[in-house]
Length: 552
Image (cartoon, rainbow, N blue to C red; front, side, top):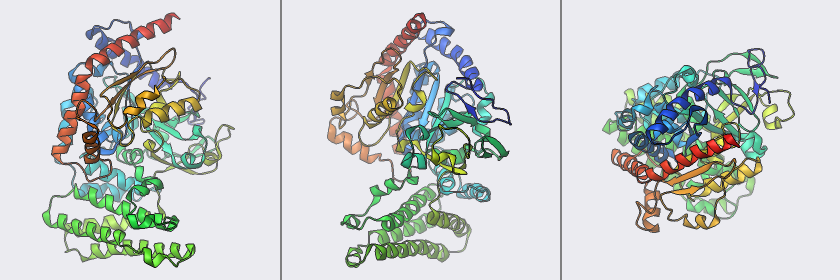
C-alpha cells in the first residue's frame, strides 16, 4: 500500500510499511549488526542481516533496572550490536528514555548503570518543570507522574524531544516506545488500541495511521494540521508510557479488606480509592527527591494520615444506605481526604519544603478530582476514513496510557511484514503469571491475523517457578522468541523463594534502595550471561532463516 503524503498539507501517513526515516536508519544499522555478527562467527551479508529485536517487558522499577542490567551484559558479551530494534512498554521505557539521551549509550553502558545509583534530581528542579508544564492546555496527572518517576526513580530529567533522535547515526538499536489509547482499550476495536512512537513517527500500529513524531500533540481537523504545537519532551512521554495508575482497575489492588463486603465497591468507592492511591504514590516519589530528615518525617506523617483514613472501617455506616447515599458518602470522604492533604500542607513549618509541597498539592488535587491522564490532541479528529473507530474519529483529544495494561511486552509493533522480525529476545520482568504476556500476544496475533510461534501449553504449567530461558521456535513467517524470566529456577531454589522474590521486588512500592538496585542489575546480567550460548545459537539460526527466506 502506498503511503499518503506527509507534507504539511497532508501530514497523516497511511501505510503498513516503514516510513522513509526508519528505513534509512535500519539500512545504516544493518551495517553495525553485520559487523557484530561477523565478530561472533555468524556469517551473512548486509542484505541478509537477520532482523533481531529486543523487547523488554514492563514491570515498574523492576523492569527499568532489569533492562539496564540485561543490556549491560549484552554489551559485555558483544551481543548488543547484533540487535536491530529495542522495543519497550511501561517500566522498561523509563530506562529507555534516559539511555537514549546518550547518542552512544550502547557502547557506554557503564554510564547508564552509574545514573541508576547517582544523586538524583532535586525536588525544586522537578517542581520548576511542573510549573512550566502546568501552563499548557493538556496538563494532566500524567505530567506529575512523569516528572516524579523521572526525578525520583530514574534520577534524571530528560528534557529533549524524541524527534531529536531522527537525525542520529545508527550506533544504537532503533527504539520503539508503546502505549495504548484509553477509550479504545475499554470500548473500541482491537485496531484502535495499540499506539507506537519512534523518533520519526507516532501512530496506531494496526490502523497504519501515523504523523511525524514532532507533530504529535498538534491540533488537527480532517487530516489538516490547524496549529503546530511544541512536541512533548521525554519527561511527559515517560509519564504517558508508564502510568498504569491511569487505569481504574489497578485500584482493585489497593482495596482495604472492609470494602470487599458485597455492594460496597461501586463507582463512589472507586473514586475515593483512586484519590488515595495517587496521593500515596506521589508521597512515595516525593520522598525520593529530598534528603532533609525533617521533611522526610513530615512526609511520613502525611502517609500515616492517608493510611489511617483509608483503612478506617466504615462498613457499619454503609449498611443501611442506598446506592445513591453511598455515592454521596464516598464523595464526601474523597473531599475529606483531599482536605486533609491541604491542612497537612498548611501546617508545615514555613520554608522551602512547605513552598514546594504547597505548589505540588495545588496542582495535584484538582487533577485527582478530574481524573485526567495522558491527554493528547487527536490527529485523527474528524479524519474521513472508514477504518477509524468512532472513539477516535469524534474526539478532539485521545488519552494515551501504559501499554502493559493490554500486553506487557511490545509484541504488537513487531509482528507481521512491516518490520519482518526473525528473532525476538524477550527478557521478562513482569509480575504475576510469568507466561501471561506470551499468551495475550498469541491471542492478539490471532485476532489481527499475524504470525506468532506456537506456545506449548505444557510450558505454562511452569508459571510458579519458571526456567531461566525458553525458546519458542518460529516457522515460515513466525519470529522465534527467546523468553527469559528475571526470577527463575537458576536463581530461586524453589517456587516459594520465587514467590518471595516477586513480592520483595513488587511493581507498586517505594523507589528501590541502592542495595535492591544492585541486586536486580546483577540478577539480570547473570540471566543474560548464563544464556549467551542459546542467544548465539538462535542468532545464527535467524541468519540462516533470513538467507532461506530470501532464496525462497
